[in-house]
Image 1 (cartoon, helix red, strand yellow):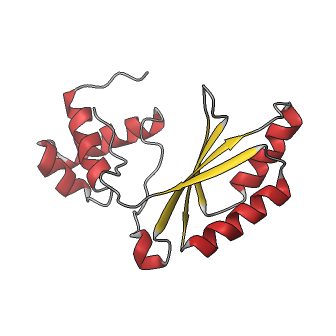
Image 2 (cartoon, helix red, strand yellow):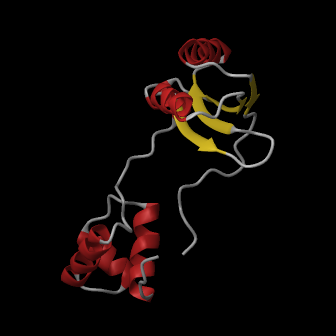
Amino acid sequence: MVKFDEADRRILMELQRDASLSLDALGERVALSRNACWRRVRALEEAGVIAGRVTLIDPALVGQGLMVFIQIRTREHAPDWLDRFRSATRAMPEILGVYRMSGDLDYLIRARVADMAGYDALYQRLIRKVPLADVSASFVMEEIKDTHELPL
């Protein structure tokens, strides 16, 4: 874990909300000079705390309005199967996250598709690439909270 002070914490909170802020605007929000902000942001980037900057896109406005969580159980746990699974899921742009889980569930996939037909196409491509024992899906009906901001 990287240690940072209150000024770093304020910078990180502001950048999580809006990474497009100019150094002048950021400095004004966190009560630091432009140069002080620049030095701190660079240090946070070099330490890996700031891993990247992105633009968040409204999924519905680009035809990806349906979020689905896909629960997967597998009979195989061999390294070669996992390599195939990793390659297959990483190659599918609809898949936003893949998580190896503890408990009864082996893997959880978070994906965005246009509609049920889009989900079915994703499902068909996935099962052609890697054998799965059990696949079930849950479709998001309402997004109550969805954020990328970490509590600092």
